[in-house]
Length: 399
Image (tube, rainbow, N blue to C red; front, side, top):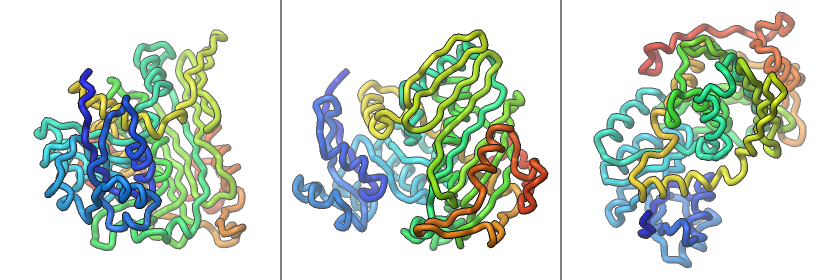
C-alpha cells in the first residue's frame, strides 16, 4: 500500500470537529496525512486555533473558499446536520472523498440525492458512525451474517444521556425542526446524540458488511420536557421485512447517564452490552460464551484511518451513505408517528441545572427489558401511542 501523504480539509473545528483537529495536528507515520485547511467562521474561538496558527494552516469561512485554494484528497465534515449533504455534494463535485459525521442528513431525500452524486463522482462518502468501523462490531456482524448466532428475533437498545437547556441554547438549531433558513434539521436524540445506537442495530443486520437492514414500518412515542420545538425523549419499535423487531429507548431529561446498553436476541444466542466500560458478549444457549471486546476502544480515531486507507487502496468504506440511510429512514418515520406529548409539569424537577422527569429511567428500563412501549404497559396515564408509519416505499419526508 502506498504511503503517499494525503491532504485533508476539515469543516468544523470546534465541537466534535475538535477530535479530528487533534488527530490531524498530531501527525504519525502510519497516518501520513496533512491538514491543509479548516472551514469554520468561529475557528479563532476554538482550542485548536493556536495550533493552526503555529502550523500556518489556513482557515476559511466556507467550503467554496477552501476549494478556491486547496484540493484535499479527503474532506471531513463536522458541521451542523443540515449542512452535511450540501457540503458533501460540493466536495464530491470538486473531486474529494468525504468523511461526514453522523447523522447522514435530516431527510431521506437529501441522502438519496447525495448517493446519486456519489455514484457519478468516482469518490466515496463515509458516514462517521464510530462503532461501525471497530473490530468488535465488524466481527459481531460477520458472525450474524454467517448464521453463527442463529436468526435474529429482537434487538433492543437503551441510551439515557442527561442534556438540559444549556445544550439546546448552544446554537440556533439544537432541538429545532427547521433551521433559521427554513431547512429541515429534525434535531432530536434520535438524530443527534444517540443516533449511533439506532444505526448500530440496523447496521448489524445488513446483508453485506457495508449495508444496513431497512425497516418496513415504525411506530414511536415522542415526549418533551425541554421548551424546544422537537422532542427530547422517544420510545420506538420498528419491524424489518422478516419480522425482526427493533426497539430503541432514548431520553435527555434524566439525572444520571445510563447506556448505551443493548440486548440482541437470536435463535441460538443472546448478545449483550452493559455500558461504556464493558465488552460485547454472546451467551449461547448451549453454554458457550464469546466476547467481542469493547467497541468504545479507539472508536473516535479508527474511522479516520479507515478512510485514509480506503483512499490508498481504492476501496470503499464499510459505513457509507447506503448503510447510514436506514437510520435516516427510521428517524423520518418516527418524526411522523403521532404528536409530540409534553410531560406533565408535576413530573419535572430541576436539580443542579438538569431537568429530570421523575420515574423516566425506571419506566424506560422496564420497557426495554419487556419489549413494550410506554403506552402498552397500561399504567402510564400520560403515555400516548404513536401511529404505525409504513416505510416500505418511503423516499421523501414528509411522506
